[in-house]
Image (cartoon, rainbow, N blue to C red; front, side, top):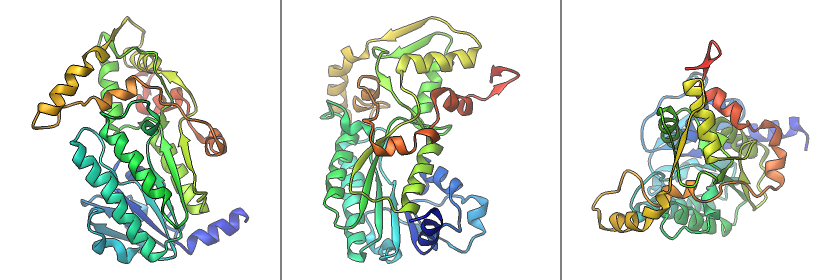
Length: 320
């Protein structure tokens, strides 16, 4: 099928996006050509502004609901619908909340999609499903279980596991930037953990391309940025940009306190500011297992320096 044929085929399809108000969802909509699909249907729990070129398009339909209420969105699915499933609970929450939103919510979507025999599904998971220890990382556990549900989905599908997603509004970048802005750079964990951050816009572009080209191969694929670095290297580069020079760094062996944090998490009536599982990204390598998907988009994936160029704009040759 030629590129022109794929464009014509996509224009006959409707696009259904869950989690449209989230970080990746908003960036995806910024990149979305309203002419690329017959109709664009957006599921989100809350109201959110649309990019100007979508706001003025009669092709966009917003649905205010979460995944647990399929009666509200099932009518927006049909056999000509391509689904990008972004909606997920992230951050720090109770295990039952992760299970409700990421497992049971995904199951509700899959059942509604199967009933309508949708054209295909792009399911967004996480690189954390590869971490060797996830018993105390309910987010990773819930995403792994959701993948199992998708594998049993009878319609066409593909699973994408992004690495650490960086963007100006990403929660993980907010935490890293606070560390890098401090006069004394504090590196969480051993510092030698390898990561392969991906820019949120690069991830959004790949997801849209997969949906438009209907690349549903019933496979699970890792997707990371164009460069592998250590956590300490990333923080040192960011620190240098913020301050215009390098400086000393202190590593914090927080893993020694993980058993205590585990106990506190269990006893606390409310989620802590940071949970044990969220520290996993600083302990376990988060790099891709390269396959055809990573190779296919390799030239479109930004390096760490290119990502930092966006996150820490330079003014007069110095980071602002």
